[in-house]
Structures are given as C-alpha cells and as structure tokens.
Image (cartoon, rainbow, N blue to C red; front, side):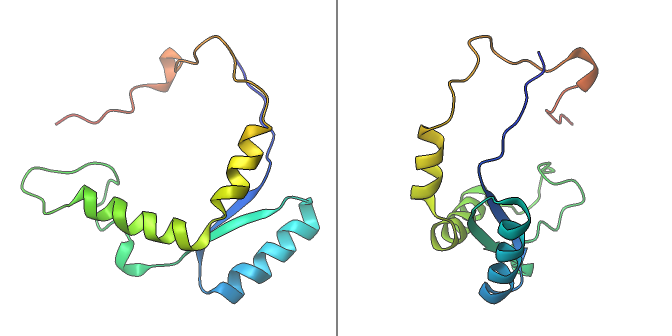
Length: 112
C-alpha cells in the first residue's frame, strides 16, 4: 500500500537560537505556506555519542529515561503541542488496513 503524505506544519530541529528558528521559520512559511509549529535547539550535550543511534551495547552507560526527559523538556518549551493536536484532530482518518513493512525493507530491530 502506498500512502500519499500531506504536510500540515513544520518543526525545526537543531536551531542555533530562538532568533535562528524564527528567521528560518519565517522563510519556510513564506516559501511553503506551512506554519512552523515549533523548534528544537541544537544541544551538543544531547547528541548521541554512539556510532549507531538506537543501539545500546552491553556495559554501556546509557539512561533512556534521562534521555527521554531531556527531549521532553525541549519539546515542552519549544513546540506548540496545542497546534499539533488541533491539526491532528482535523486530519483524515487513517487507513483501516494496517501498514506493514515490505519484505525488502528489512528489520528495524537490532540484535547482538
């Protein structure tokens, strides 16, 4: 099943500052007509130091709860959740048939 996508808004990632996000957001909105729903800051301390993001090797010091909490703070302070919910409520219903990966896409689960 091939689905078409319709973008309803943009969230900027790795913005250097609020001013940077505002300038980029204005340019994106002027070029596309899409609203900017928020921005996430560039945070070097939040960069995943692992070579393979999402893969945690045994013995590695990684606190997933701490990482999720850090991301939540960024989202809460920089993203207009109410606007996203409003757009989501107006979105068309999802297809009744579940979407499953094609055989050629492989597995997204890493195992050691």
